[in-house]
Length: 229
Image (cartoon, rainbow, N blue to C red):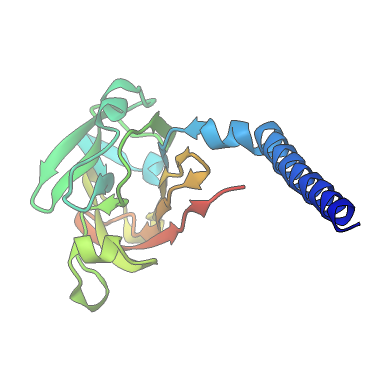
């Protein structure tokens, strides 16, 4: 009787082990069917810079007119998207990265009688995963270094734009010039891990009579990455 009881217990134990193995196999099959492709898939980080500058079309050009705006760069001031800026044509303007007393900036120049409003998107894939923001950075909250600020979750800082070569209109007829700039970078994904997304924006209006370097506020925001299911 004891021998029969032990045999029965052994059979039940083996059955439970078999059921556990079967459950593990089923779970693995479900994982491979639904999560497997996502686990092995990758998404390349990207850079996107959307530029809208309005109001300059109402100004006459005195020889050569130049508009300069912040450029996406890492905390060391090294620009990204440089090749895209130099290769893409913008109606009525020539584009180039220029050195300034504050650092590198994206310049638009024209020798036509007037400079049309600028509306252009730039984009490219990226291989590096590092914080980016619109530079030059003239001031940060609590006087943090640019490196420290780029590692925070975000905040308001000061950057700069530049205007030169336009004939100043009478103040009563001056149309304000609006700068609407939006950079977004990062967002790559590898093995279900999505990296941070860095966003920097400028939404500023300056007088139509303004000239030279003009400090403007910028917003910086980090969308944290993590496990993506």
